[in-house]
Image 1: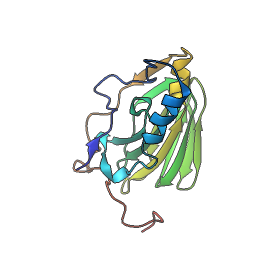
Image 2: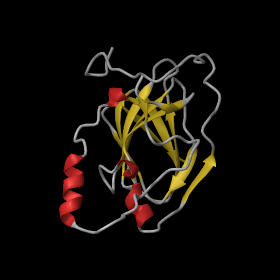
Image 3: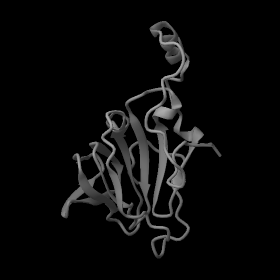
Image 4: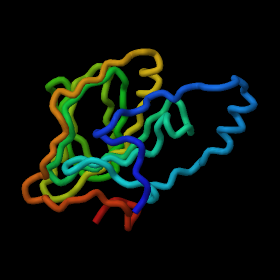
Length: 184
């Protein structure tokens, strides 16, 4: 398979890389120019499950960027993630499927092509509304910058499910796409 991304809900995360050694823009630019500019999803594996799987593309620990955290979420048919809140905003571009969010007790429905915005300090949870098809979202957030500014609040209100959705016990995230339009 591919290499596992740095994040998994089973180990601590690095939100902001340490700045070490001699400070000099020349060395930092040389280091940045040596980093990959294309991160190949097929070379990364999905983590977690069995209802929500994550593939993390960019995190501060990688050294590619200091302020962005970008990952792909795949929700099993009928699946959901943990109910949680955090200081930073997040934007979910819905690649395929249909579902909904609960933000501070209010439901917001979404489908492929929509963008979902999670506002600061919002307790929220993501749900796949389809009982038969998975859903995917590309998640973009500046969480590392918030952490750097010591805005540390993040809390899990309800943990990520550890059991599969009934009827989908063998569901796994799609490692490869066989088409570009995300339609049948």
